Length: 405
Image (cartoon, rainbow, N blue to C red):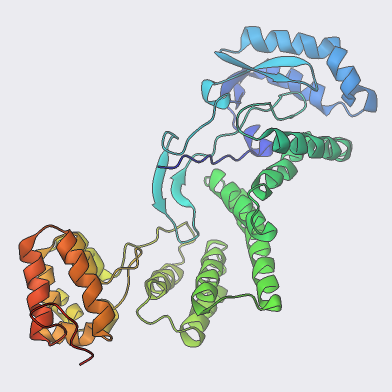
C-alpha cells in the first residue's frame, strides 16, 4: 500500500482536551497549575512580550521550559525556534505517521469521501506560541511557508487575545500544497475538522457548514465555467453536496437535490443510483452522521455474503434495477459472482431470462466475462459461463463472437 500521511491540527480543539486536573497537548499530560501558568503567559498582548527577540531570551519562557520538562512525563522533545525552548511530546508526535499504522483507523469510505473512523493526529506545536515544530510531516518549502503565514497571522490574532486561531491558516496551506483545486481542498479541510470533533455537536455542525460553503463555491465555479466533463462527474459532485446538506441537517434541501439528480441526470444502473437510495433512506430517518458507501445493492450484497437463494433473490434476478446495476467496484452482480466464485449465483445469473435482461451488447459483455471466468482457474465456473453464452447464441463453439442477437 502506498503510504500517505493524513495530518490535521486545530489547536483551538487541542487545548480543550482536558483531563480531570489538567489538559493534554502534543499527546502528553500537562498539570493544571502549569497549564494556568502557560495560559497567563500566552494571554500577554504587549508587542515586546510577543516579539521573537524577546521570546528567545526571556527568562519566563525558560522557566516554563524547565517546568514542562521536569513536571511532564514524556520520552521525546520538540524545539520551538521562536520561543527558544524545548517542550515535551509523545513518540508519535515526533515521527511520520503512516495510514496503515494509524490508530484507530477504519479504511471503509463514507459517501463524503473520508474514512468512517480515523483519528487525526495533531503535529507538534509550541505550548507558548503555537509555532509548528520542524518534523518530517512537511517538506522544507511547506514548513517555511507555514511559519511565514503563522507569523503574519500571529501579529493579527494576538490583539484578539486568542492565539490558538493561528492554526487554521497554516492547515489550509498544507492542504493546498497538494496542488489541487483550492476551494475543494478547503472543503476537505473543514470536513476533516468536523470528523475531529465528532463528539461535539455544535463544533461539528459549524465545521460542516464551513465545508459546505466551500463545496458550494467550488460547484458554482465549475457550473459558471461549464467544465463538468460529463453527467457522471456532475452527478457524483451533486451527490456529495446532498450528503453534506444531510450532515448539516438540511434534510428538505438534501431531499430536493437527490430528486433533481434522479430526474435531470440519468443514474439508471449506475452506482450513483445505489448512493441515492441510501441517501434518501438516511434523509427520511433524519440521520445526520457520516454514512458508509454501500458495497452495492441487495443482490450484490447477497452474492458477496453468499446468502441462500430464496424467492426474494430470485425476484431481484428478474429485475433490471438489480441485475444491471454496478456496485462500488463498477461490477455487475454476475461479475461479482464470477470473481468471488459463487457458483450457485453464477448459474442463477446465466439463465436465459437473466441474460436477456443483462446483455445489451454481446460482443463487449461476453469477451470480458469469459476472460474473468477463465482467470478464476475454476473449470466449472468457466464452463457454466461459456455454455450459457453458446446457448444464447453470443459465441460459437470456438468462442468467436457471432454478432448481436
